[in-house]
Image (cartoon, rainbow, N blue to C red; front, side):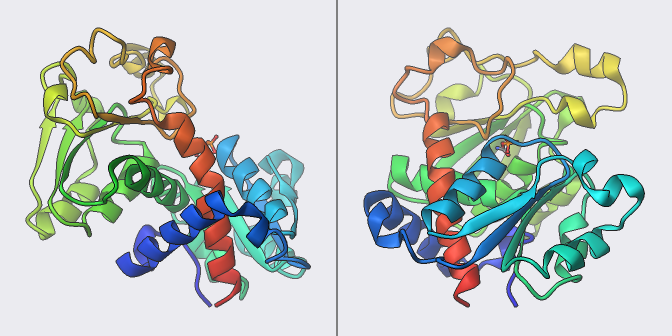
Length: 302
Ligand code: CP
């Protein structure tokens, strides 16, 4: 049984096919309205979420299926001491597919080995977030018409941001992508992720200034400084507003720059940017639903 725990669980061809299906769903919603009739999705969110949980639920409802689940560990028997494995084994008696978010790195892998129904990793700690990556890839394809030959800047909390870890892993399998990692030294991309690029001899640079590097970028992927991952609150306070993208910083950017952000944002993109045609982060939000519909269909029809 196939799960989606890490983006590398999908081949490049499978990712490209999912994007095609996502694009078709976006154009022809009615065609898919009953594809999952009689099927049930569980959304088990041990960590807060707005987009991922609600887009999964909206995706399943728009496919004619149903959903159940919880949006906080506090409302599950986890608070009584139940293990991830037992929770998953229990829920899989009730549903056909599970999407799970958990604060512990590797939790989705434990879940997948505890059930025969497909498990989708909706974010595991600071590790990976593969369905956000599918969303990002669909949005890049929509904006640029391709998933190759561009320079992407990733900016902000590259240490704790699971979305950028998954996105690097995915894009490392496409042709001629250049990476500029923009972060303070405390929040640099982890070695484990850089090693993916080193092993493939893919070039990247690590810098601290957004202003000095923005002119080279085709895509700028902003990220939130992940307050919930910091052990030292003073360090968070010192770093939280280190990058704020505003009109002034975009002065030297390309006219066709694509600005992405997985959201939620705090201060890292000024609201004055939201109406700039280069701002694509609310398109990401919308595409997240369609690509998750495509993924549910794929995993239930295998
Ligand atoms: N992008 C993302 O994972 O958002 P949520 O935390 O709101 O699900």
